[in-house]
Amino acid sequence: MPKFNDIDLKNWKELDVWVDSLWLISARDKSGKHKNIYHGNFIPQIPNQLIRRFTKENDLVLDVFLGSGTSLYECESLNRKFIGLDINSKMIDYVNSQMANSTFKNFSIHNCDVTNKDQTKNEIEKGLSVLNEKNAKLMLFHPPYMDIIKFTDNPNDLSQIFNLQTFINAFVGVCKNTLQYLANNRYFALVIGDVYKNSEVIPLSFYLMDSIKRNFKTKLKGIIVKNIEGNKGKLGKNEIWTYRALKSDYYLFKHEYIFVFKKEF
Image (cartoon, rainbow, N blue to C red; front, side, top):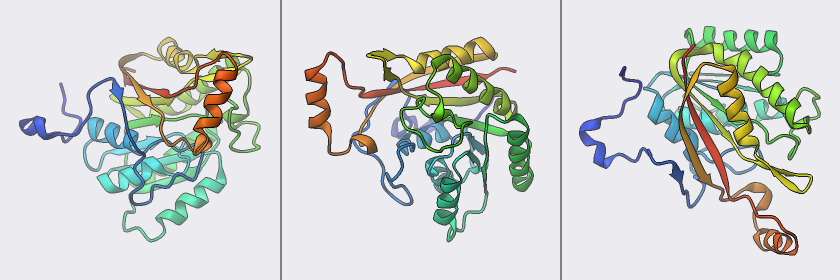
């Protein structure tokens, strides 16, 4: 198998690269630029683990839903090139301000509606040109969990979609617009959780995983279950949510999924 990372297997016992399918993380990494100020940012340990497992130094990582820049800050510390896209212009401004005094310049971030094929093509190709790259070696997808949290007022924002099938179709469109820029036989990850609508659980994570398998030639390499800790929307409110669950008949979400795929097209 071609070597796609910098892992030294001679010292494999000392590595802190996780290979189990259950990730129990006690606390969010808040070092450096990492701040839990945005509902949409995932815990930094996720991109850290994926980047170290599936890329080498100077490889290019493409994040389709940039958010507050978590994966960029990990690429900065791990010396990977980076392209990030986000429909929220305020987040692009925020991330640029965070990076203003950094000596790390191998990144290119863009305000982009990834449901728009032409705009996505233009912005990714701008980034590839700036970084002198032909394609990405790892891609990350951390989309909104439907309309649970609305990140912008843009009608094309996936967080504005309340209908399940419409959301799935839009997500598949995003994948079609972006996966072409991932090198063949390289890896991409979908970080996603489930939602509760109309008094029942909607297994959004598995619907999206299935949509990828149905529409793209890939191998599913891992289904990782990760605990949810330090969620911004529930900070300091655990007792309230526990009371509400006991008063009703549902269970509280304490996990989300990381699906790892290998591209074969």
